[in-house]
Image: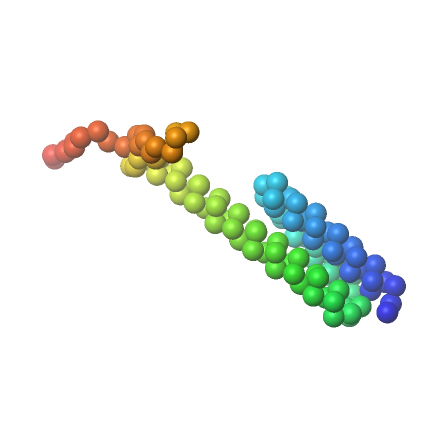
Length: 116
């Protein structure tokens, strides 16, 4: 096993753990920088995995981070869509109190028709 390959895989695993923590902390603004750093790390050269177990560990971490990031992106899009609805005044906002009762905020009270 080549020491450079092992060091690269160790650095990649450490980096994937940092990426994981950034996703969990909601540091999504850093994802562009993180992607570039990860790409640079992988571009250090074509290397072979030290062994199947190490390669599998890295793959699991990559898959885990990908799943979390995809969920974060879906969440950001959902919030963005909801804010757009609220901004345009074309909807209600449902919220829940500490006892779990739903309350609708906003929206239109009654019907308002405009005639040209």
